[in-house]
Length: 219
Image 1: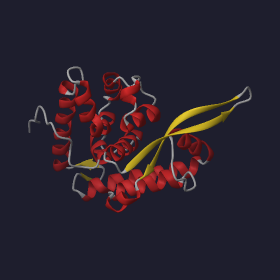
Image 2: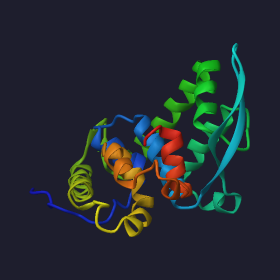
Image 3: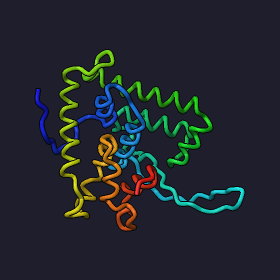
Image 4: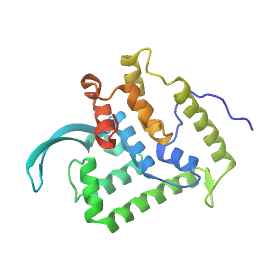
């Protein structure tokens, strides 16, 4: 069956499931990042800038980090995959109220076995969701799953070929907010970051884009 050339709307699936199908059952860090970014874009995670004191042998200095925290009145409506991911990410930090990328990196170093176990469990839940939806069976994509992948590929082509920010940057920035998750899945992150000009103070002030820049080091 021929796949459509372009589809303008993102898949009506959790981004982790979309990535899992595209990677033939594998679940990677891209699915974690995409899930977090979409939660920020949808307002289920709020962001804030926090000052941290960093002490080294030579000196002590303050740095600014971007933290995220769940919006409590949005929790009940979250997809179970998102609840499990956030419970894992915050749980590995000992129940902290907010987390940053530096926090997660430190937790992974301090508790590597617990961190890996939690991540593997979440990956298993993503694969199980794909199987529940009839998109995978026995580790392989079903015909329905292949059709979803064809549509996802058409959406990826649309973002790649027409998702330019050159003509109307302010409008494009607003439009790209919820699509950043899929840019991660489709390896378009570097290009999107360049076009969003994340080094520009005005653009980086957008909470969604601040998370993009500070969490993933792009810009």
